[in-house]
Image 1 (cartoon, rainbow, N blue to C red):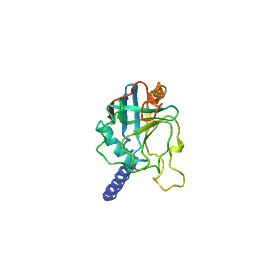
Image 2: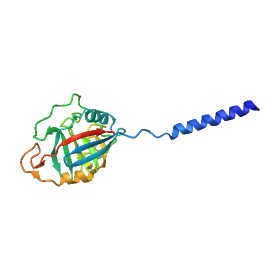
Image 3: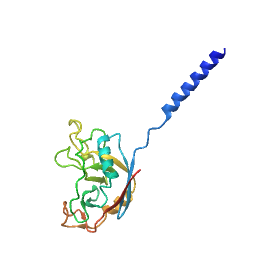
Image 4: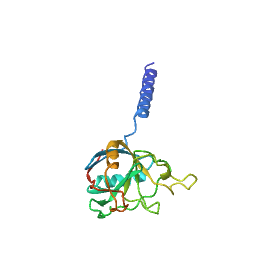
Length: 197
């Protein structure tokens, strides 16, 4: 009788332990806060939808690569881009990392998205990234294309500071200067700090 009671108790504890293990939530995705001269923006990394891109960018955020970077492209209703140039439009030292393979199969471009820019080669993304001011479905992977060959990888979503981005989108723009003429803020907007939680 005693043995049966002990076995029953062990079974109950075992089931309770299994239930507890199943209910333990996964760790929260990392959050990054970028302080700019116009305010702070916080975004949550999409480590599930773009794991390689997220890991690549987290290395850059944690090593303070973006401190001193200037925003060099502002297109109201579209995006705000930064990462490669300082406030004087001088190219900053490139990061000591390889390019990252494109990951577009499991993410979509929406207002508040944070995505990695790339050149003509879809696997050439390195450090330039952008915040999305609107839904931009034309930046998603092309329907029917081979996975991870078209579009741009979204690696985060803004959770605080969209109002800051909207204010940046409304600044006066220089009509001629910058890599995208007519899209450079007339008064430099610079990254002053980066924090990873």
